[in-house]
Length: 125
Picture (cartoon, rainbow, N blue to C red):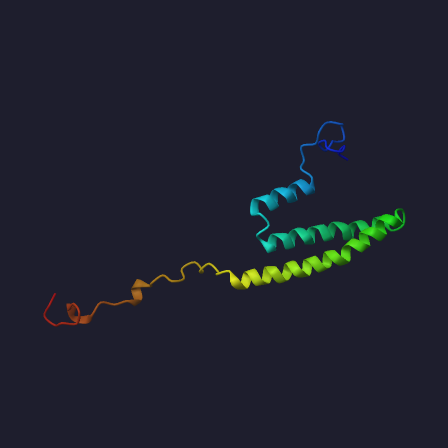
């Protein structure tokens, strides 16, 4: 565990070069400035997974920790529901990029006027 205000320490006592989950999250949030509800939703789901996995391991040996971890899950579920709504709203409101090839004219389907005439006027080549 990192000393207060210091870098995270590795098992050898040297500073760890592996970013913590908090550092990774902070970096991702600063890149998108929190504007992407889908990214926020994914982060909340990852956090929930971590807490849910922690609960069975702490329930017998650290009951106080387990109680508080369980208490975090309910409001976290509420935040996930709100992020899902926001993500769905953004998906509905955001214009979808056109599919590859959409809007392209198929030139083989466009034919020239018959008889070699231009603009439908006979006798002009």
